[in-house]
Amino acid sequence: MTIKPDRWIRQMAEERGMIEPFVPTLVQEGVISYGLSSYGYDVRLADEWKIPSTTASVTVLNPKEVPLGYFTHSRAAALDLLPGAYVLGRTVEYLRIPRDVLTLCTGKSSYARCGVLVNVTPFEPGWEGYPTLCIANLGTQSVRLFAGEGIAQVLFFQSDEPCDVTYAARAGRYQAQQDITPTRIRDQR
Image: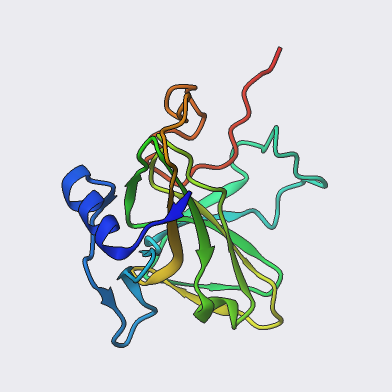
């Protein structure tokens, strides 16, 4: 596998719609940067959030059975994330991952330096959708999150050959998600 440079990312975005909307340069002035970088693409945080309930009578959160209504949906240009709290967000960009590419997504250093951790699993070959992000404040102070600005960087790794079974072909549970998507576990019986 090789990490792909900016010219490859630009070509895949423009010819195949791999990233939509696509910003062909790194926007930095007065914002947390987003757009095309040397070996990746800095995605932006959308203006919607799923905020976990602080009043639910849940003593243990089971990822197989998250109660309906556990998250409150909110829209805002910014959100102050409390210490020790997390929120689910999504990117502005819709991604379409080619069948011979795997991506890793990591949080931006501007937020990491404030104690904010951004977590998302790799985007597998054939996956598409708006990535759902878990954004956690590990620090001792509230941290302001800015919609429309950079939140994470996606790195693209291309294999010498395409995989046999893509995420789409195996009907992955988060395929083509349009919204912030909490956990989805199918009944395995």
